[in-house]
Amino acid sequence: MGNYFKANPDDRSDNVEKLQEMVQNTIGNMHDAEEACEFGNEQDKANIEAKNQRRLNSIAAMRNEIQEEANYQGE
Image 1 (cartoon, rainbow, N blue to C red):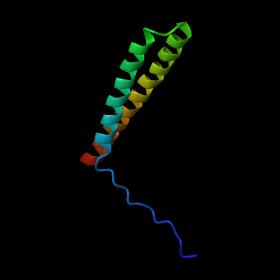
Image 2 (cartoon, one colour; image 1 turned 45 degrees about the horizontal axis):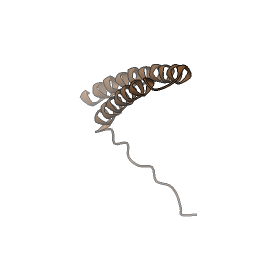
Image 3 (tube, rainbow, N blue to C red; image 1 turned 120 degrees about the horizontal axis):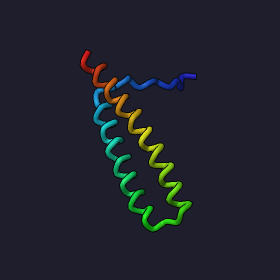
Image 4 (cartoon, rainbow, N blue to C red; image 1 turned 60 degrees about the vertical axis):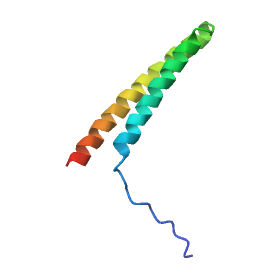
């Protein structure tokens, strides 16, 4: 009965850095996919284009979150 889970404290001090790294990794993945696209068939190319569009959407969301986090830390 004494096995309660203790929540970790909310440490947001490095969120901006983590998000920026995620953006850079996603951009790198997009470039890698574009290079691979050269060797794929039409279906592969269509799949890569769709996935890269989703990546662009994710990057936009991460950049918004970076801005929000930077504003929060600046308060």
